[in-house]
Image (tube, rainbow, N blue to C red; front, side):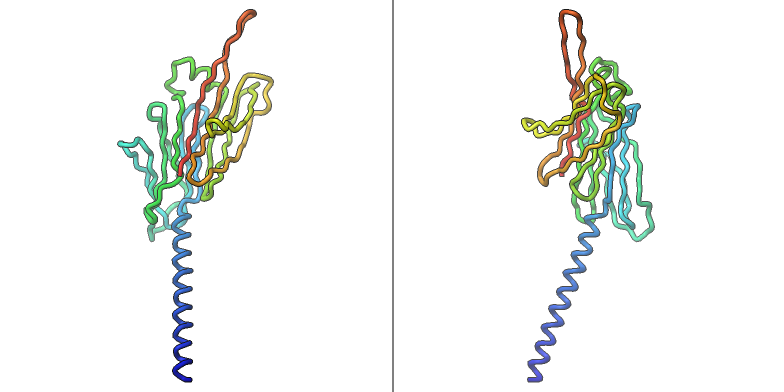
Length: 228
């Protein structure tokens, strides 16, 4: 009987130790996965892009430009030293594109990979940029640890704004055209499904008209593609 009691006690100790170990590993993994707290990609009125991002305590962030993929890669490292928890970096369009991605070195996980397709307003000389981008003043896309992304944007005077989901191209479209105007400041929330791209595109409608003929053209910039 005494041997049986000792055996039962030993089993309970093993189960308890396993439970504690599992809980500890789960907590550690959760902490690693949440090393990136939030981030925001922004284009200001001048056409310049920047990215703000927040990280957890004891996390060091380093931005490296991958010349092969032309991606601004932000690496997150664990450190015992006290570090700042918020960063702001200016990033440049490479041609008509901008790529940004986060890499958590503790889990070797890549996430929140952005591709922005846009005209370089600061260097623009063509009509598409002059007409298509003059409706949108500035915009930003903000995300956090979950799959919800918030688009905030401002438009100029007398611009009508209409957001639709295009099922044929699987993207959200924000249509901008001259009109009476239905506001200047807008905010939209989008949910990204796991394993699927989230596409957000500004569709600018512009054209010319006369007493006998009217024509209309569209430009689809800026455009954001968000991948896992």
